Image (cartoon, rainbow, N blue to C red; front, side, top):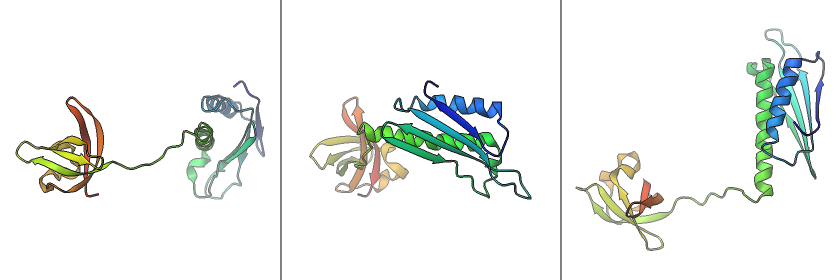
Length: 183
């Protein structure tokens, strides 16, 4: 990792193996954001329980210009998986990765928008041939095959029926890769 990485062990002896794994996972964070200027990882076992071992909690503080992220491992008393420090570490770094990815998407203005599938109406139907055409809301014709109709509902189709569909380029023009009955 090129950036300053600080690792702190609280209420436990430092572990070279855990430290090596932290360094490995922290280095991977740089592939998600080149903006990272500091990373501080705190390793801390939570109180021992009578019927189980200690749960491990990892805190990851990441600094980028003008912003700080505080990721808490979030060990819960009934989460026995976090008795293994490597599982708790993995989960904490996954959360850090998601936060960085979300930040970078917003920074690039590359946030997903959910526009929904295009709509149309069945305008042609050849039941014997197993295909038909959809007229889109903007007046285009899109071919579909019986195998494109979800749920095996091709036999229920009628002309004029409203559908949603996913469009792709076919050999002879636009075609629907999936057809959802009902709009």
